Image (cartoon, rainbow, N blue to C red):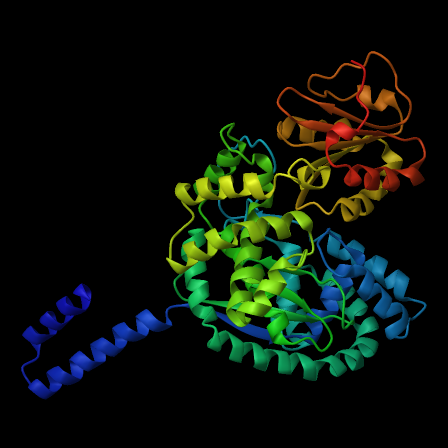
Amino acid sequence: MQPFTQLIRLLRDRVRDKKQMMKTKITAFLLLLSTTLFARHHIQYQISPLGNLIYQLDCITQPVIFPCSQADFSELWESGINSDKQDAAMLERWKSARTKLNKTIEYVELPELELLITPNFPMNSSNGINVLEQVRIMAFASEKRNHYLTQLKFWLPINAVKEEQQIIDHFWPRFAPWFEQQQATLNQFVDDAKILSEKHDVDGLLTAMQTFYQSDLPEDLVLPVYLVAHPKKSAATSGLVFNENSVVEVLNGEKASNRLAVVIHEIAHFYHERAPLDTHLNRMAYFFNENSEVGKIGYYLFNEAMATAIGNGLLEQRMMSPERFEYYQQHPMSFYNNQGIDQAAKTALRLVTQQIKNQQAIDMRFMAALDKTWAKGLHQIKNQPQQLLRHMGLLIMEETYTDMINEIIGTIRPSSAQINTNEDLNNGKKTVIEQYPQMDTVILAKNWTQIQAINIPEFELVNTPEKGIYVHSTTQGVYFVLIVEPDKSNVTEHIKQILAWSDFKSAPSISL
């Protein structure tokens, strides 16, 4: 209260009238109180029919790979909404137009960094924007189609705006009646979410999360959460975050109590992204240090595990009875529909809860405790290919296999993937192997001649093995998964086989 006391002393010297003095003191106190209480982060739920349509079109066509319920939305347009013979052509036009928007504008020049693997945070999270993501969020924030199209003219050439308008107009007459049926349940969801947020002090939790992640953000910030109507009552769903904006898929008729944890989970990713660069680099260095007990898998899981522990663990515990939460926690993959993330979050929950309760940031003491906890709790899964390929390189040497990128990524489902094709190499670009020397990489080729064209560390082929899957490991513990397959139709099955291994030692070795 020291600043308040100084303020009152200053006012006392200037105001002689006692009544005026009392009024001034009360005004100053209320001003200080309001700053303390209301300078907080606050969730604002929004529902946009246009945003929903554009999200569905982006999800179905995937102009850039992002997690969403692609199969469910495709099925909706094939059966739930009457299809049109021109739909396929319109979707191709949409994908072509939106792919051109996948450009990043950086406002702050980042220092040159030599990274061991791809970072577990977007490098431009606080320094720039992606145009495609920006216009997608712009659609959610626009109340009407004409408002969105007017704003779009400031971003795109007039012909590009006209192209997008024509495609939207093609789908809108059939989409609007369907979405109108979803509107009432989404409105009820928002009303219930507001009540739950107040009851369980979600704003207070956001404040603690900002401290926990050491996020570089204003004290007073509105966090928009845009709701996407999912066509099914039961299915796996997705969410994503772009700057302070979250986009969350909501199942048909779903209660807010079943989705609030996902909302907080997505916001946690935003807070994680906005930690200072040095903080991110220190966390990466910690898990890649030889003294780390859990090793690089700890870094791979860190972002998702912390968000899951807070949203799907801590908040759910607040909302459930002790008996129900105990049952929920013991159920396999109840926090997250992925074994590694689920197990990492549950193992870390006690540490995270204590740190949030004490309003403390992620520090070296926390990291050391987390490392020891994960070394024990993740012992059985930390060497699984599914976990080690969570941050992966993908090098496709056969030109005719490049159209399999989405299928391969969809099968492995990594948190991030750095991809090179043979065309990149022919254009003189660095390979993912050269860029990230500690990152495990899948190399796809049609024959061994294509493999020999790559500079793989500590690799020299003496004999030419048969086609199939081979794993080469270096003295640094880096794995290169070589898939040599002349039959394109077998590639996906090879990927599934790899993911079923308990570790990479299950693969045949290569004679060097």
